Length: 215
Image (tube, rainbow, N blue to C red; front, side, top):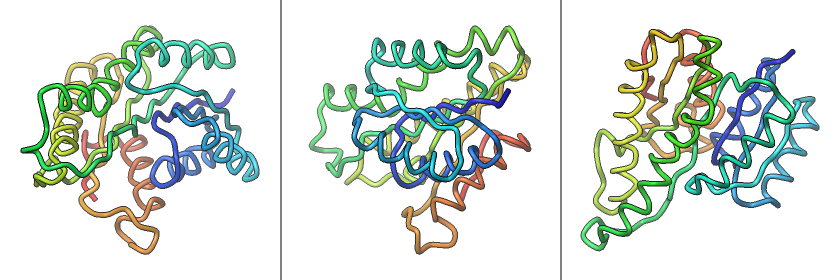
């Protein structure tokens, strides 16, 4: 039976390329996002490539919706081998104009959703002493931009969380890692193309030499 990857925050770009990379490595691919129309299109494109793909609608920041999505996944599959968390609130707002409420709300999606997904899959992963959590990081974690203040805080949180969780779970043979993307994602960029980033996620997953790859 094929392994299963669940991609949270699925769409075009990095997550689509990750779906293609893992799918071509014989993984079944489960996509989670808020917009059904986008998911339907993406899933159809993956199926056309011969990838076993499914979609489930949920908001990554909503705990109940995420639990419902995973319950549906478990109706099809016994075990989730990999979770790729790609969800983030992308907005250009200067940090000075943020509020406590807006930062907290964004942080719940940008970082807190990782813990929601982890808590759902962790019991099974602990039983099997197997599994991986892969997080999409960003260069704002290393060099914050005040015009993207909330996102920068979120990516710093993702980087910290990846390192902390990997240390906490390594004795259970559960790997947590992040690809920190230090540039604008573009099909025209050799280094920052979605395909190259997806290759880095595969390297992170298969080699597990470190909890972070910067690209």
